[in-house]
Amino acid sequence: MAMVAWCYVPLRGSKGLICIFPGAFYNKEAFPEDDFDARFSKLRENARPDGSPMKRALITGITGQDGSYLAELLLSKGYEVHGIIRRASTFNTKRIDHIYQDPNQPSTRLFLHHGDLSSTEWVLNLVYSFLPDELYHLAAQSHVRVSFDMPEYTGDITGLGTMRLLEAIRRAGAKTRFYQASSSEMFGSASPPQSETTLFEPRSPYAAAKVYAYWMTRIYREGYQLFASNGILFNHESPRRGETFVTRKITRAVAAIVAGKQDTLFLGNLDARRDWGYAPEYVEAIWKMLQQDAAEDIVIGTGEAHSVREFVEEAFAYAGLDWRKHVQMSERYKRPLEVDCLVANTRKAREKLGWETRIGFSELVAIMVDADLEAAGLAPLGRGKAILEKKFSHWNHWQNSVTRVVGAVEGQASEN
Image (cartoon, rainbow, N blue to C red):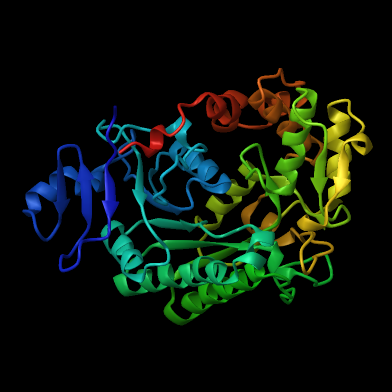
């Protein structure tokens, strides 16, 4: 069994970063400089095949939908990638198991570390130890409905976690470029379309925490001259979307109904309208934001809105099913406060980043249904698979982005 190098907050009374490697552990203060540098700091000396320096990126939330796609994109661009994962008694790395790399191999460029954004000491230690060129802060308690049940935890992780990272960068004097994953949910009840100048009217604890994180990012940019950007992303989906999110609930249910394993799908508000795009495209925009000459806040979306009802109709029709025979409403999935319509004004993204979506609404639905059919052991209908082969480079082709994820050894990136 392969061993993974993990990094932890130091024990009480010690200093520096403790790294667990096969057969030993290293603490920069407790062990000779040569030992530490030989096994860990050498990573900084990595270079691309053309001899140029290898950029180091740190991703919080690497096991999430966006984090997994971003890790793949950065690896394809020659980065050394470090990801933060939560310690758990069960496997929680299924979205990145297919890109797992044995850290004992000299060519390895993906490293995972256990961490906790609620710990100020740990966050400070993290940034001091790695001094990444780019830090992509994607981690959050990101389920809007759950945030009503866990408002304190949502505020601590989603809001204060961002402040802890920014403060760590400031204290370290690092030249790190910082990306904050802001959300269209911050706009709440504001009239659509929403742009970078639209006033926030949050309607959930999640949205309120994101508004705090947004403003802290701007405060540290304007007050301390950090390169800190907010990407205000509208809804972006994919086969790796969490199974409790409405789009994935719908496409998984379609596959289960086709397989004869389910008959009824319970949903909440079918009239809510959202600007839905394809997640791998959005991580390309995220990367572009940190390559600019100056940090800015940019809205990322498709510029068109569709209702949950339309998503249901499209998904069921693609599989040859009548949704009215299978979908029922349930009060338990409705929020205390609803957000009626979110749709992006994408002008700045087009002008500043040269970015716009390539995957349309019906194509997104086809990709997700095909992927869930394959995950259920059924043959994909084919349209979604063909779309990825035609419109994306190798890192997000069907084999790489879907089939390898389904077939990966569960939990191999969690091995210790």
